[in-house]
Image 1 (cartoon, one colour):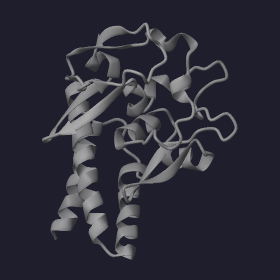
Image 2 (cartoon, one colour):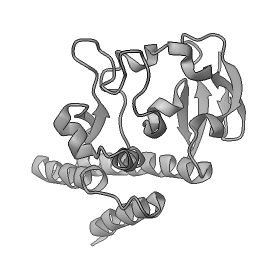
Image 3 (tube, one colour):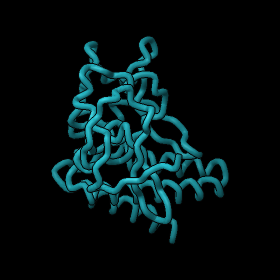
Length: 210
């Protein structure tokens, strides 16, 4: 069956009604919960910047198509997210990563645009209600966040291409530079994230034009 795609203001059957104690999507996720710069900004607001997450073991680094990115770490024993409480509740719900907010939706990137689709069998809750995609994500302004996710996707693809073309040592240095720029260097939480992100990507692109 061909997937149905949704835009920000479309209704989709994704509302799990606060999960009612179910936490199956917070377990056994391996290294799939990749963090993006907006997540890093949110964790910093929470008082847990990415360097602290890496040090505590709540996050780890993985290689995504040649690019080093942080991801949430599952508990070695229980295979549960490090932020999942013993009663199955999220300890960082207000500042949870975009990948967590998105579930049970996925993102589709095509022709310079992004839309969403429902992962029909991914969520065990079969009594979901319809909700607008933007309300389900719960990030304001929704249009700016949507634009950021698309820009980060395109920027990553751009960097992956550059990394693949460089020598091994050059690729290593660039990877470390990208990691420092977007995840290890603090953001100013008193100012707009999206402006800071645009400044950082512009700085990197300008460096490659020189």
